[in-house]
Image (cartoon, rainbow, N blue to C red; front, top):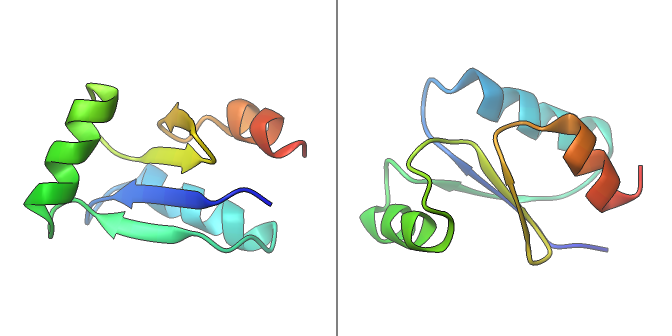
Length: 77
C-alpha cells in the first residue's frame, strides 16, 4: 500500500474532493494544512514548484490538483 499525503488549505474545494475520494476508497492518508505550517509550505514549493493546493503525494509520485485519472492510475484503481 502506498503512503498518501494530501497538502491542503482551508476553503479549498478540490482538497475536500480529494480527501472524500480517498475516504470513499477506504484509504488512509495524512493531511498537511500548509496554511498552518510555513515549513511544510516551503518544502512543498521546493519539491513541486507549486504554491496551490491540493498537492497529493502517493508513494514518491506527486499529483497536482485533484486529478482523479492520475490518482486512479497510481493506485491501480
